[in-house]
Length: 142
Image (cartoon, rainbow, N blue to C red; front, top):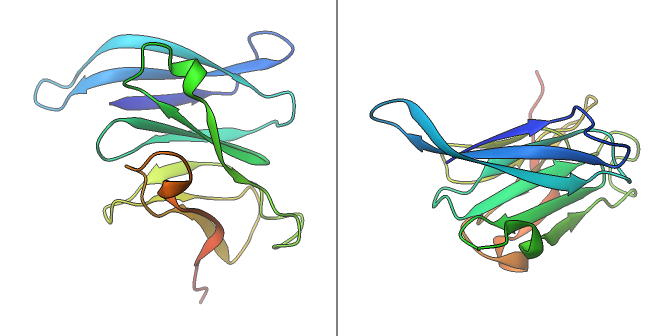
């Protein structure tokens, strides 16, 4: 699977994520799907897919949502797995770009300089079982 976050506003309240099936042998993308996401409370974001290709994580300024890509109605599976706690690195701990790492976890950056990334420890698990943690990974600076 492949996901692409699009910050271009479709209308006054929505942005979207495109998901595709990806054939790693041929390099071909197929089965494009649009997932419209509510951004009335946010202005930036990113997306990443779990290692088992089942769950899509969409990160917005103050929220991280999980969607089940195996469901018939993907939008109906939206589950909030992380809500921004403003007491942790206030002003610089917003949720931004998301990336699946070689260790199987998903790391989420911020828009500003910070010494922490957010982390989804078990992205193959549903809902709160994925153990999403704000400021859960310390980034050592030199």
